Length: 122
Image 1 (cartoon, helix red, strand yellow):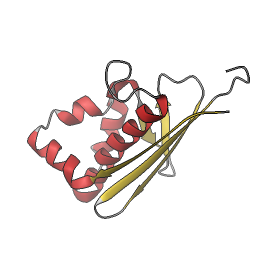
Image 2 (cartoon, helix red, strand yellow):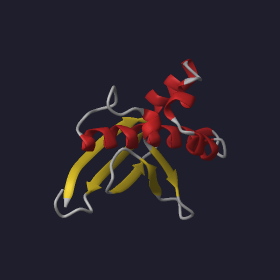
Image 3 (cartoon, helix red, strand yellow):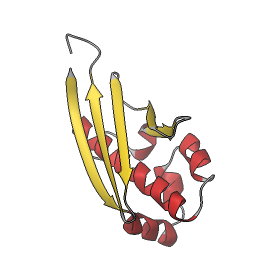
Image 4 (cartoon, one colour):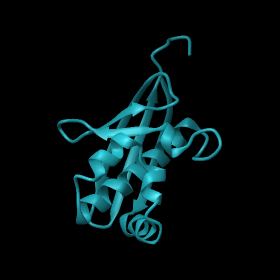
């Protein structure tokens, strides 16, 4: 059963400007496993990765129904790319299955999160 759906559209340049102005922002946004992947990239691909993680976490918080804040923070959600490059949620406050999708253009990243319950009584 679907418990929540969240989508987000983020301008890559806006996130890149935040990273340039506040380099500590990356450590606040990304978990250690995400940071490890991020550090493998440079240039546009690095900008896409960090903007993608921002957008995915925003999408998760919308699906969860809380937004980013007191109930769920950036470090509560971890999304790493699997060996095929697909985003995989490895940590979240949701006990069911979390489906993640991300797509980029040269200037935008669009993400979607679907929360699926595994308990028929939930």
